[in-house]
Length: 402
Image 1: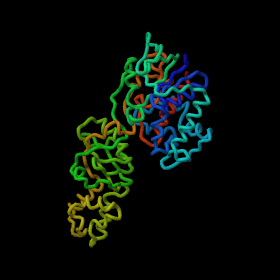
Image 2 (image 1 turned 90 degrees about the vertical axis):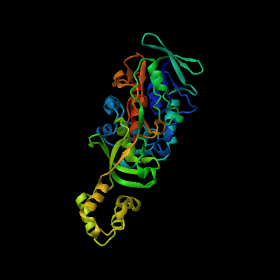
Image 3 (image 1 turned 180 degrees about the vertical axis):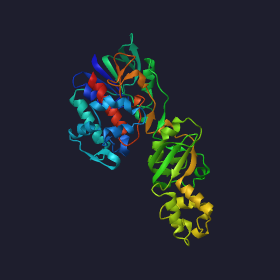
Image 4 (image 1 turned 135 degrees about the vertical axis):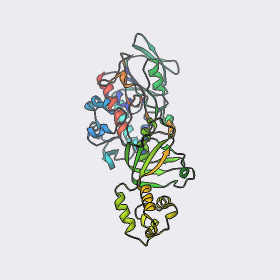
């Protein structure tokens, strides 16, 4: 018998096993033929291992129940993660917006460090070990059942199976089904950090397909046309809608509204006011409008915004037309109709209800020897090193308290 069985060999599961094995006999069960398949994909294959911003700002970027992790972060936060890797001969470097990567620019470096720790701590790793059921007596797990009908017994269990995004890495929702069998509640699951679809005519006609706009401001509006969230970043127009950092960060707010159509507002020049823009246009009266705007906007977008007035000299535009064009630049309204499926998302929103988990220990309030870690819980964050930090931190806490 093992002291602890960890189910899931991703970021959360490996960190849980590493810390639990300091004082306990641990088995790590992974249904794939190798550990950390999703971890290898993060940060474009470079592994954005955490983010260096102050922890109070960090929690603001965990848009799905970030406050639940206060206790976990008090034990093991982003700075501790940096120290964990750097003290194990895995130097990290900081890039834009606090994102931390291995100096090697390879996620394999991070995985190798975690594997070495597992080996050093004598963690038993069993591959092709998909858990399908539990044997339970009075709110206590006696053992778990694998797909090949073999039994694994442990005194305590940590469920760290991830969400439903990137199912080819093993994140296919097994953890939710296993938790439900034990009486746990699963909140609504939906994609987060995912590209958005639109049925607008300019999208269907692929007018702007492939065009990137940088340093824009994108707002998600509610039914009263009030901003629900505002993101300042970049977007890419695609054949199905919009993608890019701003669109991804807005996605969960779009889907949370559960409306068939959700309006967005795009300000292509957030650092220039309407009055300043009017002055810029009127300052060159004999110049075609598109030639004035191409100094501030990509030519394709300038042509799109100007419509039939692209070749019109600015002095020929009446006030109403000018104001309409400026409004389009500063507040271009279009609707989105949902997103790509959860399998295409970077993150799963929703999960095991946090009402049924003790935030100080990650312990189940229903089963007395069950703990949770990572994305299987109802926690999600923006991309940028935040989600993997949640996985490492909650994994550390679940493994440390046992």
